[in-house]
Length: 109
Image 1 (cartoon, rainbow, N blue to C red):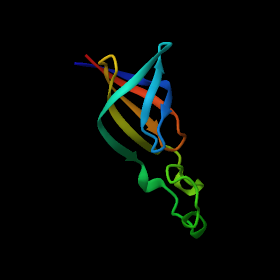
Image 2 (tube, rainbow, N blue to C red):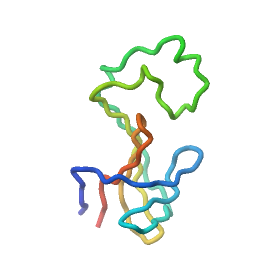
Image 3 (cartoon, rainbow, N blue to C red):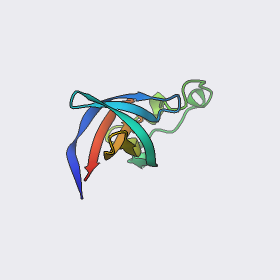
Image 4 (cartoon, rainbow, N blue to C red):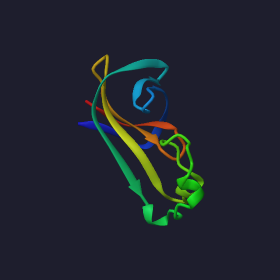
């Protein structure tokens, strides 16, 4: 069984250079990530995105950061991680690829 949070809980996450979670703060305690069990991306509303402009394509910015034309109203662009913590807790967390914010979505029993 698992507990799904209908309102995802904001997390403070320490991540590696590839934006994978290393540790996160939850309920005032630090949880170290022992293992990334699964990783996937989810995009919804992609058809509402503006088309990339030549300026965007020439950008040399962080490839994980969206350009202005890649953001849209009502769209979702997330990278999910099912992780096992050092204490053995298995949970799903995700990074909002549009804002860089991290959230806790689900905890497994």
